[in-house]
Length: 146
Image (cartoon, rainbow, N blue to C red):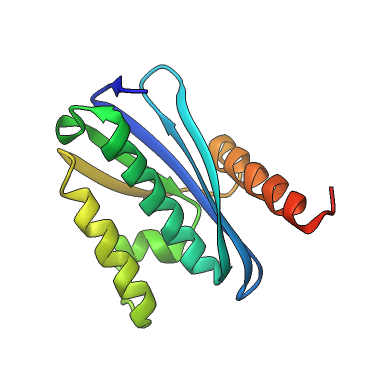
């Protein structure tokens, strides 16, 4: 797929069953009209914060490889993780070296777009709820519970 759009909205979530525990990251990418990509991935045994950052990284990387003229795109990344969004917006300090590495990776990816804004929303946002459901179905399948 080689979608061409200038307005990209990304919704991300991460989950860890135990902290650390089995973790997954997911995202939805939308253009101005509809969902153009949904994805979930397994991270291994990681923390919830790792999973939240990894979801953002995965989504931005997908956009770099699949959005034509991504360097002209205005991207809004939306997450329910107050910690991660406030770290990315420079409002919270990053105390963990692991999180510094992930934060730097996100920063490097943002340079590939015209602009990237990070927005925190409540978990009740319909797209965040959808990503959360996708991750939980994926992890349930791995656990053999559903």
